[in-house]
Length: 384
Image (cartoon, rainbow, N blue to C red; front, side, top):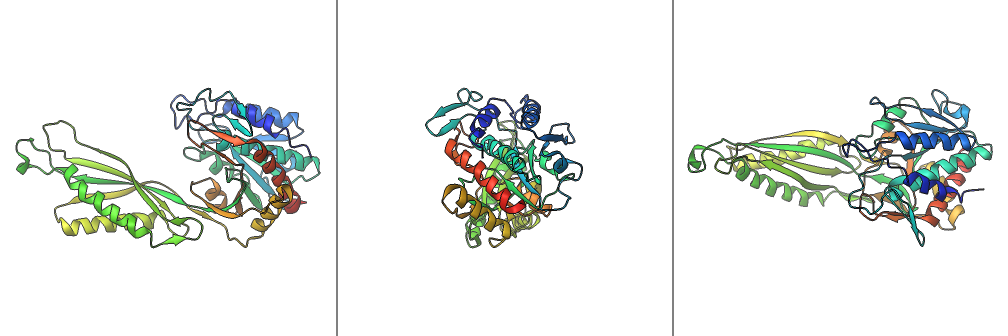
């Protein structure tokens, strides 16, 4: 099994600027890296199929030609989907972000950890499975994971599978849960007036203070509801805007909060809880004019720990590394929520490292090789 060249592939992926333009205006996007992956597939005896997002950004399905035809995955035998995303966040203050460099076991560069090492492991595992005659393993390389997840949503309109592995970084543990999130905008209305005549107006910013205090109390109450792998739900205030001229009472203040919700909690339920907090505030201040609306949400993810895929994945990692991995929950959200919503049993498994979205980012070289080998082991067990 030839998997050592997974690091060469990871280096070449890191060297391509694929900053998400939705996050960073003027970002290069995924077109160049998609062309590279398509050529890599051809050079390695695989076929590729492009599934553009509605905005034209590329998403790829990679694998043996029969496996990536229309309605890929709807065939005899069990199909395994190995997922990676091609986009990255902005380079920030990172030094030489697209010049991959090696320091000991660390491969540095923007996207090394999040998640081009995982993408490289997935692609090499598809190739190795195909060389062994396992023709029902497909790789998907998607756009826009770091922003709106338009890529995976479009791919899932055309492609299905009997199981999926999301190769986001999990430190080579098998991840079976993560939180979702809900972004909520709370608007507090006041009445503008001259600063020398405050009795004629209502200061919307002052009125927002008790709302923030009540939300802090609500955050403390979340500690009573916990998940065995994820702990409690989370809430933080992300942004506050209000006011204009220094001599004028502000007539409007907008507070934006993010609530990280657990499996079993819905975005609509979270919004209801925030509305209940506002009701508490109105009870204390009948003149309070405040409203809340949901601006964006993503569902949590969970797969049963006794699912067959979970057992096969743990055994595959153990065969590849000699160590049986733990079952863990992840702090971050991932596209696994969408594959699970599509009815595809899903786990997350990716290389160790550090620095997602940070100015120093690296993936473990030995861990990336171990990830590729583990994925091949899983392909043999699941599809062979």
